[in-house]
Image (cartoon, rainbow, N blue to C red; front, side):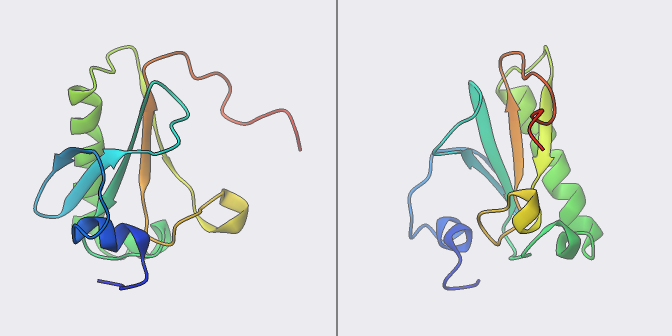
Length: 116
């Protein structure tokens, strides 16, 4: 556990979160600033700073994706959803613990804004 990492502290129970699903290797909880009717973050319990680091642990990466699929099922996102990994400053990553955003529950619109 990274003691200064917000998400590691959530995993440890030091900071509360609304848990949607938990496995031995992953934790899924509601985003505090949702961008869609359903917006759940899926993280590995083990600290990986970003998706590049997560890719070096194929089992953990598979667990994160399996949990994202389970969240979509639990949230009844039968009309579709997105799984988004933000990496680095230009990618919009705000917390340096890899996390997948599972978003859905309404039409999501274009992938990127027209603004460039």
